[in-house]
Image (cartoon, rainbow, N blue to C red):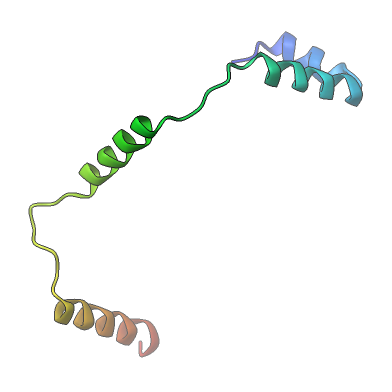
Length: 76
């Protein structure tokens, strides 16, 4: 987090100098690339968040849920 003094000094800079500061900051960041294994592990973690102990609804159950939602939305 920026200290208030540093933030105040940044806002005092002219726009051209602030843009130059942004460029220097971006250049200072390490070149980070996301590897395939990182993506795969992230996807696996997301799938784990979606898991439930209940079975997936059948097509008929989904159709009933959609119909109930439409009735709720448009007829009430």
